[in-house]
Image (cartoon, rainbow, N blue to C red; front, side, top):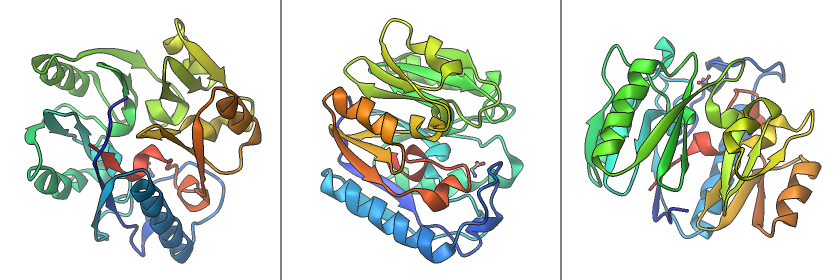
Length: 252
Ligand code: GLY
């Protein structure tokens, strides 16, 4: 797995509850979201990462989900072009911060792409084709990645917001996935999620610590059984807005 030294995060704004969601879990509480965001940043620091915190930008209620704004490798940051018009423009601030650290390449129209649709497995990138990421965006990403020696392939994703809403690569050839996406991991070990535990597909490996959302005991046990050092993270307010652990940071 890549080892990370930095993370960019953006705080949720007071209008966080006005963001896009399909969940029926009720409105998130701003103060609680901020508290959970601070706790998330502290966990990243414990994992050895310097955390760069950007202030909220209330033009973008979903702006704390910074993962969607770029795909970052050792050599390059490819800024995205969000597929939901309400999120278009979020990438600009992140591009200006990333430019201090990386060469910048960009996805351009008519391509759309959100980082939540990109799953890295060693030097291969799976690109989920969803309502947010189209084939043009996928082709652009693929050709930039190829320049830097990475391979990629597309995978169709239906009825799920982003590819990584339903699958995560844990490292050491292990995946966790909802049934519909388990085929991606066909030559690997895959934990297939129980009904009701689908949200726990979105896990995040940070320097060999596996962050998992709190409240999913079967997934937790299955992951512990594989020998991972886990850290449980309270994500209740972000879950209400269709956000997960990977969504809250850009790691590099
Ligand atoms: N609320 C996250 C998204 O829909 O993009």
